[in-house]
Amino acid sequence: MSRRTLVLLVALPAVACAFVGLTHPGHLTAASAEHWRNMHLILIPIFPLIGLARWLIARKAGVWWARIAALFGYGFAIFYTALDILAGVAGGALVLAGHSDVTGSVFAIARALGSIGVVSLVAGCVVAGAAAFRVAGVVALPGAILASVGAILVQQGHIYPGLGTVAMVLLAAGFALMAVAVTRSAVRSSAVAQPA
Image (cartoon, rainbow, N blue to C red; front, side, top):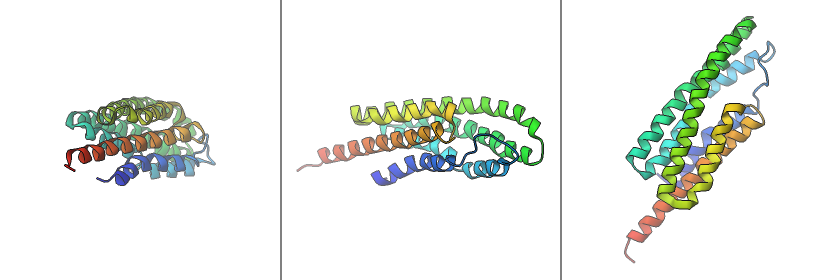
């Protein structure tokens, strides 16, 4: 896989979430419910792709790194998507149907599942960062730090404008920097292995 392809695959899902998140209403109300629901429907196939980024980076360090990153990517994909389906899609649909009093219980379940997803996101970023460091050395650290900080901010910011946008941009930038680091290392290694 080329460096350009890898960078696009790891960064674009978070960038897409950041852009969609710029339209995220601050509160779920009768006036915002339709947009709230539809926006989260659009995000269902996009959010899980953030979990793929860590695997794509970690696999450059070997099969065990890839498996651990894939496990955490799976955890993020399942549990954070559950948050979006419950709080986003179901919450919006319930408010649209006039049942605004039920969002509290739905949101409580969604928050618990989303927290598991965020823990998986953070752990996966740490694994991908360690794998990238193993492959590329110190040059991988800025990306690892940016992605890990972005992952931590998802807990408070989701993709809401402001903190959520920053979280998604940090994830995208961190993943892109790690992708460049691991592919640069691979290019350098193949150049060294070839006789002059």
